[in-house]
Image 1 (tube, rainbow, N blue to C red):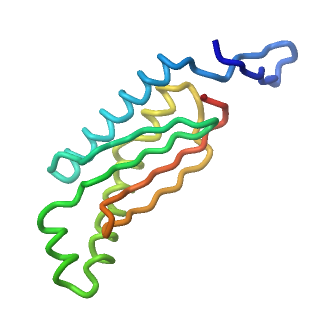
Image 2 (cartoon, rainbow, N blue to C red):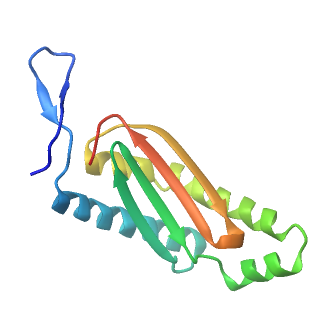
Length: 140
């Protein structure tokens, strides 16, 4: 059983553990990865690449690798502004998944925590997309 600190709530005497056990983390990672894949497929009409989820302290990190379409790869290889063009398109897609696709709401409901911050960036030249969410409680 993992060691955890107790978080004191506004109501005196009420404390709750903040950590999920290993099996719960694994299940959450799987559900989040499936949801991300589903959103990407719907938004981009393409199977996403490798989606990896990491849960550390109060953060969830989502990495999507090898996700570019053949057309995007062509644009990067043939145009001088190709990387920025593809990056802009993908940033719009990620923003849509976070906002319209309900990714934040899905994760908040799954882990019973409130997202405080989110940060994301896209690196088309390396076929990497990274999303970071910070929550109001420790998860792992």
